[in-house]
View 1 (cartoon, rainbow, N blue to C red):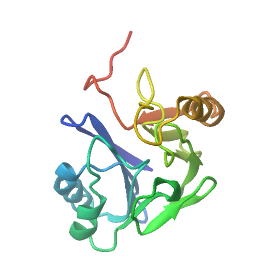
View 2 (cartoon, rainbow, N blue to C red; view 1 turned 90 degrees about the horizontal axis):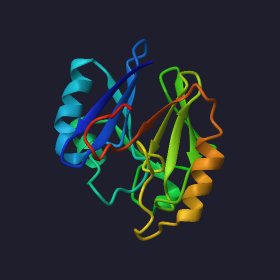
View 3 (spheres, rainbow, N blue to C red; view 1 turned 45 degrees about the horizontal axis):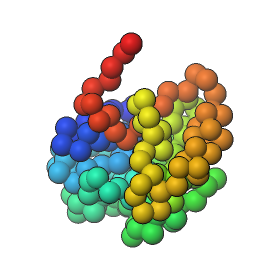
View 4 (spheres, rainbow, N blue to C red; view 1 turned 45 degrees about the vertical axis):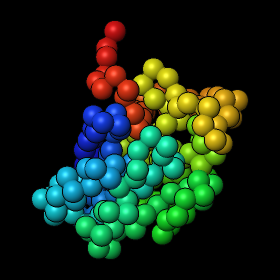
Length: 182
């Protein structure tokens, strides 16, 4: 699997492009509308077909780019958790599997930041895309509508911290704009 991490300085959002280079199929996790043209251009340059524009939750801090990506890349479908209440072409729930090429992402419901938060896990690669459930040195805020700190704590401890220790975690944000090592 090939994966590319993009960063939007305005919203401090990470977007992830995952691709099966043999079958030329890809997914894009947490796209930002202002950078949808960049994302579409990258996908075209790599000669990929975007199967899904996926969101880890309904974002309060930026507008998703999935709608624009669907216009720029015909055939792309939007995907989000059913519990999010957002409109999409495909809805997922805990335990579902999202397939692209020969790869798959398992869906873990990880509510707390919002009731519709999910984490996408690729066991074969040892990676998890946690959205705002688990960030760098913190977690998503719970003072938004549908936020709940106890539920978020349980999601992090029972769903994410129980993944194997060698897994890499990819969050949706870095509010400092860079990784800091100590």
